[in-house]
Length: 250
Image 1 (cartoon, rainbow, N blue to C red):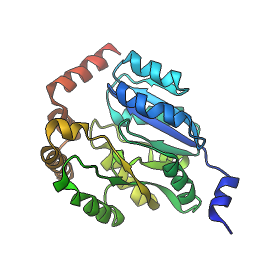
Image 2 (tube, rainbow, N blue to C red):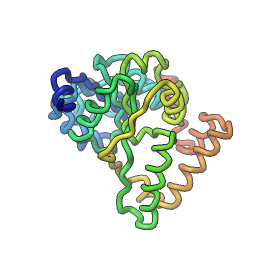
Image 3 (cartoon, one colour):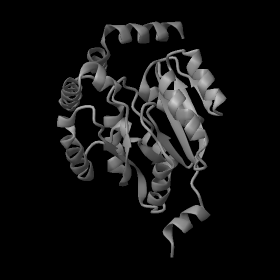
Image 4 (cartoon, rainbow, N blue to C red):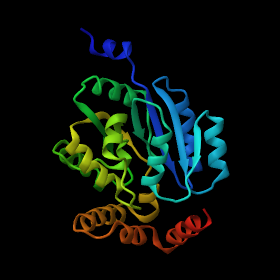
């Protein structure tokens, strides 16, 4: 029997939740294409920057737009998930590409009722040729129980997300923390084709510097350093001040 045919007979409703923070340019590249995807039941943009351009882009593409008072990715994704109605919730970063092949892969994976969620392998780009070997390392670690990161387009069945209580209310490392609980909850599918993300941060700060910084922050979190402290170190005083002003004005 054709497995894909079975999937199409009973299609899953996939809700795509996109947290946004000063991401109008990336939203313009991502959201209109999602609106054209038949496998996407709804797209929900949750913005925490108060960017009117982001709102216009979302609404013009037929997406739902929500404003979040706090620039906190975990809270933004929880807010979007609460407003969604799909069988599956896909958490999508603004700068990560999502195509029909990825959505099809989710449908096929979730045809197995034991699979509670998962993510995609990552595709490294040519921003620094000496880092390309990390793609194979990342695939090896992910296959063997490694962390599912936010830029891997994490997806989860709605009932499981609700059972897990959503993302933790922490300003950074929410994906690392959620990944641990999701892996412990049941069978996980890590899928191809891999997803590709923008190299803007790597190009701006340098590929080696960004890679080393990200690795160091994950180590520090695993050693028990507060995600609130890591957030201050990662984004700097400007982002911290903006977050504080946003919270006080809400």
